[in-house]
Amino acid sequence: MGDILVRGGVPLHGAVQVSGSKNAALPILVAALLNEQPVTLRNVPALKDVDVTAQVLRSLGAHCDCCAGGTVTVDAGSIDSTEPPYELVNQMRASFLVLGPLLARFGEARVPLPGGCEIGVRPVGEHLAAMRALGAEISQEAGTIHAIAPSKRLSGAEIYFDKASVGATENAVMAATLADGVSTLHNAALEPEVVDLCHFLTRCGVRIDGVGTKTITVHGQPRLSAAIDYTIIPDRIEAGTYLLALAGTGGEGTVHGARPDHLEALTLKLREAGVAVDFGEDWIEVRAGQPLRALQITTDVYPGFPTDLQAQMTAVLCHAEGYSTVRETIFESRLRHVAELLRMGAAISISGDTAIISGRAGEMVGARVQAHDLRCAASLVIAGLMATGETRIDGLRYLLRGYENLPQKIAGIGGHVEFSSVNVEA
Image (cartoon, one colour):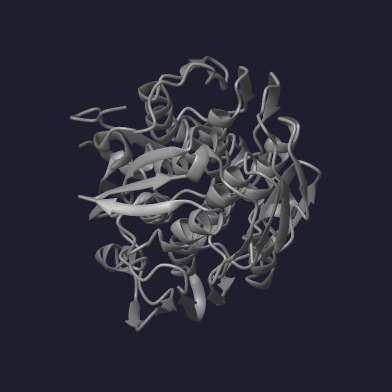
């Protein structure tokens, strides 16, 4: 399935440009299904997940063209199916987001239960509860969710999320845009990607109040029929990964295109660790102090410390002085990178949901390791850049899901990462 070769032991220096947000692009691509007119999206990253999403849209009858330079056009005016194929949905959890738009626009949808990275059980119960609140009848048939809206229309409703789920919030917002009446979402997710989706839908002609708060009110429209041009926000997780790579190797550099307001939880912790941080409107600069100071990290929903940066931070803290703790509260299987870091000489123990890191207890050395998910792969790349010698990571397919042109970007800041092309489906 392809390997990642990393040569480490050299501080990184220089500037890197962040790509568009994968986690914003995917729901916005899906939201284009709600619009009867063509949509042009810019700053879309060239990633495996984006390619799969484009295939899902095409399987439903939409025209989806991915052009050079991060521009994607979607014309969903001639949808002829409301059932995406299992072999596509099973590749990526975000594919389940087609449920809300298809149900809202056509009154029915059959969507297979999703797949994706192996980071624990991520149930779709909150998604389905939201659809039921909007009036849908839900049944499960052989691993496929079948949703029907009476009289082909959903109805505005009060929706209460027991947990602030990003995916459920996105699915509910999209479904509510074509519901009859007003819908209010309580305990909605606050992530910037949810905000970006709401801004996109607003451009399509939907009135949405409370964007960026825990209570979102969506005023349903009879139809959406506005050709628009929209630019995706930068990827805060990619930006954070490069900031951590610079800091972890004892280097300094600037991440351009990053939104500082999206990464406050990370930059505050970097400063606490002794890293100098400066920023402007669309850039963040770090200068690592040596040695780094130990930290206590607990992942949380936005604006807390992102679970998607937890593995990368764990790798960096292997070079901090003293004992650090990293507690994972979002996904129950997201400490699998620890076993791989141990192969490289890290001193880490696990107690329940917490990794306890004895920083600088042993020199990190290159080794053969296995990535188990996207962010695990990123953490092992950072560890390989921090370690002496060569690190070979099995699991290129995961990294291709979330990082555009990573070898070239790392090379631009003085590092060495290369991909093998053996048995890799790009």
